[in-house]
Image 1 (tube, rainbow, N blue to C red):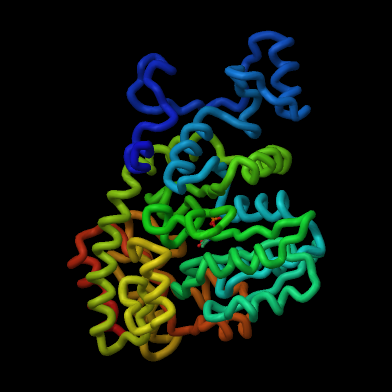
Image 2: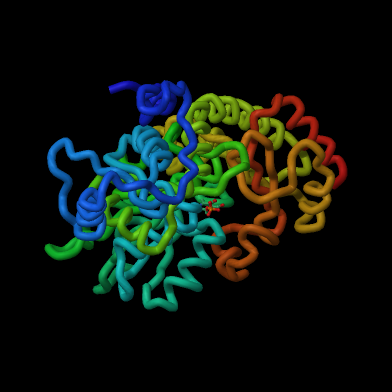
Length: 408
Ligand SMILES: Cc1ncc(COP(=O)(O)O)c(C=O)c1O
């Protein structure tokens, strides 16, 4: 089987499929013409009626909310990257997460999640899923298997949900441990899932399915898209778990659109190149920040030797340290604001993973909708800066951070 780096360039498109175009065309259409009414009836009997296509039967397209060619192409490349049986593209990272819960869990189920989480995910759990009857519990990165299992008690565990590394702090969780918790709560009728949001490291550096995860989720808005010009989400996993999510996706309309799918398939061709450059840049930036007198507590996956638990996970769970850095500026919120407002090359914006370096103040932006107690308990404070290192020349990024820190 070719390396995913080759698959990401070739997969899903044969020039013979469309006027010999070398590159994937954009199928910007909302609907597809049926060969005949009989063919339409057959298609609907497969999609709505659940009939299985016959051997070699070409299941065409019906309507773009259900499926479309650009989806199929980008999804084949995404599945290759994660070594997954199948992948699905969604309209956003949040809609990928929501569709996953709605498909595989039911009200009353317990969702046990690692904390911290991206603020938007936390809000969805607390403000949307909890009122619908889901039970929500959380644990920190150092919780043991026994401690997490005790939280389940006699409730029906729907899923153990991890973001690792977590947004914004780069806290890391043991995927194998989470999957052992999920397996320990399985019954003959019900199997809890281990779901991992792999947005921060991406499939280049970490493949959660290899460590016991059942489903992997991404905000493809970040490293997979990589240019800050699209919003999308992804789920990967076995065919058995992904198929019902595909049905849910068209039922609730969380499907990725053709243009986004086209942009994403194109972005995946350069994904490893971008990530390698960003990772090399992040090491230079992290070294600079560690040595700076106005910076405290730099959290970067390339510098974890002092923490035995994380150093062990680093050997086992990921192969490259990514380009997200979290650090505190001495002097609290005022100092953090002075720093951010003085940046020139690095943008003061939310989002991450793109070619452009971006920094933000999670306390007052991405995580401001998480209640103060929760923020404090998971180590988010008002001195904290989340930095996504881009592909610019490393000396220019460092020079910009240096002049901005001089204003603090
Ligand atoms: C880790 C993580 N998961 C999910 C999301 C949600 O993704 P989207 O903004 O594409 O809906 C984000 C967004 O920042 C994120 O950082």
